[in-house]
Image (tube, rainbow, N blue to C red):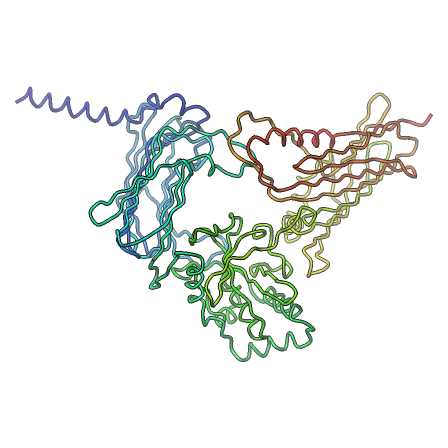
Amino acid sequence: MRSSLWIGLISLFSTCAAAQSNYDVGKIPTNLLENASAVVRNEEQIYDLKGPGTATYTYKTAITILNKNAENISNLSEYYDKFSNIYNLKATMYDAKGNKIKEYKNSDFKDKSAVSDGSIYDDSRIKTLDFLNTSFPYTIEYSYSSDFTGIRYYPSWIPIKLWECAVEHSSYTFRIPKEMTFKYLKYKDLKTDSALVKDKMEYKWACNAVPALEYEPISTGLRNITPWVTLAPNQFEYDGSKGNLENWATTGSWLFNLSSGLQVLPEAYKLKVQQLVKDAKSPEQKVKILYNYLQQSTRYVGVQLGIGGYKPIAAEKVSAVNYSDCKGLSNLMKALLQVVEIPSNLVVIGNDMPSLNSKYASLTQANHMILCVPLQKDTLWLECTSHYTPAGFIGNGNSDKTVLLITDQGGKLAQTPSYAPADNYLKRQVKVDLNETGASLINLETNYGNAQYEDRLGLMLMEPVDQKKRITNSLSIPNVEIMAISYVQANKELPVLQEKISLKSTQLLTAGAGKLFLTLNLLNRQETALTVIENRKTGFSVNYGFLDEDEIVYSIPKGYKVEFLPKDVVIESEFGKYTAKSVLKDNTIIYTRSKLMTNKKYPAEKYNDYVAFHKKLYQADKVKSILAKID
């Protein structure tokens, strides 16, 4: 008996040791360690659909954290709400050899509200666990299950979520009752396995031995070169509502039914609306007056309660409390216009997301709602969450997008306005009074338009102390002191911000060999040069196209003359155009610079051409003029 017991114990310990050694870092293939800060050792997710509104989901993963660069992913963050739960939550940490360091208990997991900034109503919650370890490498392993009693989307599968992350194995199994239909999109080279298993169709996708990708700047993303699958329901049930997402027309019908009848306003409120527009000369003027009223009388607050994530709060209620989310504010604006007999359409849009895929309807492609007002001569698009932007300006994150108009005839795809590079402008005039000590007084006036207006708008709203600190840190002028700052949006109907800043510097000129050296591009230099990337994998683009135009007038210090001015510069390519010119006039140097950049999407093989273009701009922005003493 003792002999049998001893053999049994040896077998048990051997089995445990073998299991632990599965996470031995030494067993990771060498090619997966190259460029990697983390390696997904194993990931498995199974989504089992029971019907249009119920499903179960199981997930487990093991990730080896190789160095500090990947420390931010060494945590568990899983969301749930009143239509889902999380149970069977388990987690373990292993050392570099695959030996267990710690097994986590239920009390180690934090459960808290997932209300985000700007939201006061949100039924989402989150379970979190931070795996704290100071010794690299280590492995984290966790798993959980969820039940869903309301469904509006299916989980996606994205095994490569980050740069510098390799994958040993990842898989996704999706099961759906054979009488139901769904749709999916996938990475072009990914194989789909499907089979009928009892009364369900089972679909499987998997990848193995996917190497890590080194970070690539201004990338358009990993989607074109790594495996992924995204799925969407055709029929679904959520929070007592049944919907159909087979196409955008049916999706729009569901959303229209949710918002139907929610534009009713109290009679006293209607009289106020009519009084506001009584002197308006055109429908466009009425829209602008009512939009300004909306901006002044309401504020944005996120509301994400069940179907409230898609259904606007009734206009009557929003008019009483004067706050709501993007849906409620857009719906209130629709109601205001309805009072004065101007039709409009709620618009579903992906803010800072790609355009809607015209051939693939799903609710995960959008995160925002705005309003479209078709007028006789033009169409106005209204961003109803902003207090400052003028009617018709919807921001860079909403521009040039395929969006969904919610109409009584169903959903209709449309295109939002686009802003050409010349529309997103910076126009600056600067006067600089130099003296021979190198000190200077600097006055600048700048107009920012459209996307650049939007980027700068936050500065106007800052407290003066924070405003001054932000501007000081952004300037490349040595030993600078800000004397005065002013921001004005002079015309509320235009997306243009006017900036005036007075500065002084004690070290604008540098001296050497009895001469003074002046870097002509004072404020808007290309401060860094990009690096060539051999065998780049991903495409690239800039955030938005823009046009910068600077004119700087330098007064020459007494007792000095201009000994050298650089030649004119013209640099032109498919990425943009740059010009710089300096002339001597009436004892002043007038430096003018223009930089136009396009925001097209370029393939990876053109990146090093872009680097060469970028480097030329970097060098051109450093040119100097030389001043010499008058004999």
